[in-house]
Amino acid sequence: MRLGRKLASIRVADGPRMAPVHLQGKAIAIAMAGIPIALSLGVPAGTLLGEALSWQTAFLVMTMLTVVLLAWNTATVPDHPGQRPESRTPTLRTLSLPGVAPVLLVTLIFVLAHTILYTYIATFLDRVGLGDSTGLVLLVFGVTCLLSIWIVGAHIHRRLRVLTIASALVIAVAAAVLAVRADSPALVYAAVVLWGLGWGGAPNLLQTAVGDAGGESADAAQAMLVTLWNAAMAGIHHCP
Image (cartoon, rainbow, N blue to C red; front, side, top):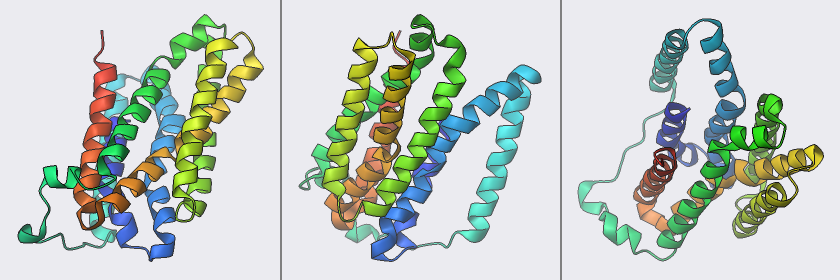
């Protein structure tokens, strides 16, 4: 899953370059669609394969698919020239550009909140009596993430700020429902739907926002966002 996220982050910056301006939001959405697909289908499939055969087999299959993906990208994705060294903005100066630091801070909080919930969702479901439905819950989450990506991709260039605020509010409502009404299976599923709707398009929104704020230094700004994103995930997964 982490490898899939890393590959997606490597290629996401190429999406807007290969699309006209009015389709750049959709291009980023397509590039980021692999994450919810991996979460909703890849994780259960990998778990099933590991239980049926062995974890070594699951890793071997993943490695083979990764090699195929890299070869396909190399053969079909057009290359784009980077910035000349003398025209690059230093990282710290990129961080000082108006809007970049706020987007990075929102990203940190967003990813921490989501990762805490996602990391412990199985334990949470087990405590509320839905432990046997973890796979179904994750499937619902993944499907609604895909729906969110489609919605965001269609409207991002006209309603970036509104969609970002709505995304945060929807996830906040979902977390609140899970915190106070987890005794109701119907409300748990409703909260998961809201969670997926809020989270699915979030990577697209944040990548676009930091790219817009970065301007000519969009690549550097997006690289910082990806680094911060993975650091937030690593911090959660390494907590005792």
